[in-house]
Image (tube, each protein chain N blue to C red):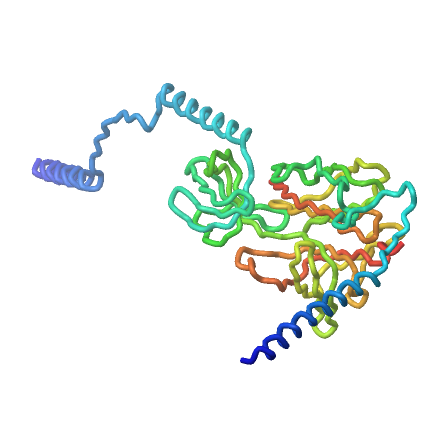
Length: 239
Length: 144
């Protein structure tokens, strides 16, 4: 009897300690389900967002229909606008729309998307968008490089430093450095086909068409590396 | 001053004036009028007429318009120029030259680069001393 009671007593103690241990290691968690709007948006909200997106797309399509392109040099960069100075249209204000305006850098034959922070004063840019008075609302702004195509007569050939002087029709004189990367071509006066040529074939009196890279900082510069040249020999005009 | 001195001065001045007048009249008499032979029906060209050959020379670029925006990689250049002129088109992306056998000319598939294309179009007429005529156009090509 005494043994039975002892065994029962030990079993009871063991059971009690087991429950206490379980209670300590397994904290009870009560879950109260909450219903929030963001977790499962209602159909009305989704429809409103779709409608706003449609309106935005329609606005972009409309702006692209009436868009023009202008090019110029950045004179000031502000939060929501950029000021540019153009050759043909004077000073213009370019308005930036945070949701619509896209920003690109043109590199060769490709364009890559960039951030608005990349635009700095003196960058040469092309802006597309509807133009009204002196303001253009930008659909896109592209950083580009400015190349100029001109023509004139060769007045001097300097064999010492591989340069030539050219007098253009508007009475300007340019000195062109003929580099190894300059594309040099000449017109065959009989067939009018383009042929490769070299510096030694250039002579005073020849007509020359040339392309140079000219940034806004080069406005007063008269000496450039020739990007490409095409020569029309003076013999063509002596027939 | 003595009376005789005054009379001598007056007579001297009068003699000098008479001699001068006689000399001027004599030189005018000796000048012979120049005769320039002119053909009976020839037009007489006024002295201040211009003689360069670019006056009234046709040169017009019909296509493209300046500052045209396109998504294309090439463009067609159309215009008018005097017959048998050498027409030269150049930009950073391409070059072409033709001799037009009629006033209307067309240069097709002229290449465009991404971004701004400054295109120089020059016309050299068959007159060897003519100053070429030039047009510079800008075409913006934004390609996908």
